Image (cartoon, rainbow, N blue to C red; front, side, top):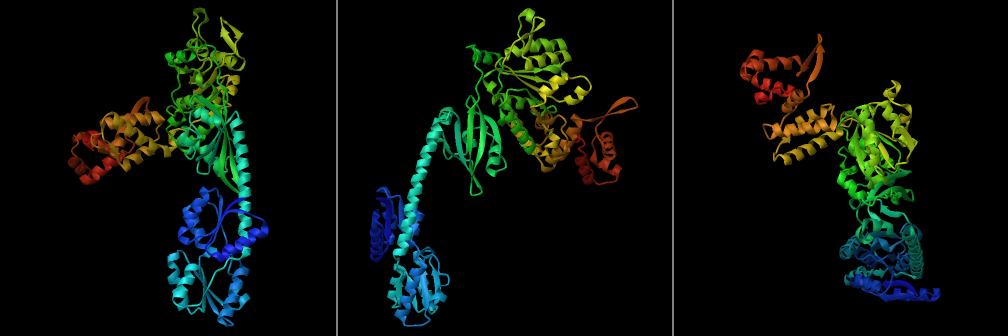
Length: 632
């Protein structure tokens, strides 16, 4: 017995349906006549009884579709069937060229095209949007001069009440047979889909990799057993939620690239809990559109330490990388490109070089790479080479064997060593570093010994190593070892779109820290955006703190910003062998500042001297950022 329910508005149509079922040798679960008002309830009861598809027509089909989630197959009247009704109307009216009005829902018909030519009559179609419109549409048809109305139950009742000729839209065996065939085909497809889903579910749950399926809206559709175990949550608690809300720190830009079809080969890394994962993404493409993606998550094997107290040692020593990709403050397209590179490099165990000026978040990047790598469970040691002498560099990195003092390379075993300012390494230490990383040879007791310590090297530099290499200040072998996995972080002046957001972030932070309520004007913000910020985020952050601490008013204006910038970061120039500080670049600004000093801030006297109004003087002071001591 097919799990089909056939709900019909009239007994005559039911009799047609019984004939079709008998001829085709098909049994359905439910076959009955229902009233329009009961159609939805009858459909819900049919679903509860095990029916999977409803066959209905006209208004009843529309009501069921709008008020339930039950699949509905509609029974539109075929051209042949409507043609038979037109012939019946012509015989009934005894007119050669009658004008016939059809009052019905649009879904009642396959097509009404060319019927006038075929049957030598006039046709007017009055489409119903709701059953309540029936009386008005019938009245309109009568007013338009139609000779007869063809419609459903309500249209026929209305026409009967006013004594107007009408015919009921009969659904014949042809429509029923077509709808029944489509319903059976849909059930077969649903069975096949269910079998496929069962097979896929088995495949997912027997996979050793984590698998996440998302839709085009980045919402999780399904996860397998491995992902459930990693998250410590059942699939029911995450399905339907955006993936970036469930898995913090995931690369949403990369996922959007998959869904747009711009990423054909996509791989990245992220962590669920303490487990770093290498992720390969592939789009789901159907009929030329990208409808979602599959993310296959491979566990990156953590390096197992034989020392059972490894975690406690790491915590006690403070060798922990606390920051991740979500701690990176800049979000410009160029920075997102750098983050994408960093996520890819995290999967590797090879050295990573991070280049950038002071204050460009190099350390944050290094910690994020460590926290998304197989070394995540190990220590993270940060060594600044620029502050050490050549001998101290060797001792800090490789230890002192005579004193049994371990260096960073041994302490960071199973973890990561970050060497800041690697360009400051002596040539001797460069040689020792190259041998330790590439040849697994370790300096011990004044000789090289074979010792493979599982340590990942990362370095940062603000210098161009290629120039040092050219000048003989950097070893060629170490340069090529480090430069393969390279990340170039742009200075803040090249990602100015980041500046407004950073300013508001810092101001909010320092307002909260010092219980102040200082805001910044649009012109002041623009002045800060236009500044070059050679110290990048560090300089901007410290400037914002100073601004909050010393602002004389709640609203910071352009003049105060420019004045403070000139005070804190003056231009330096050399003239006649002497170093001079240049606070103001404009000659007019220099003159105004000098007059303000001479007249002790008396703007009226300065304005008279300059032969301008005090208002114009105030505007010039504001433009040049002259004189917080003059209460600008």
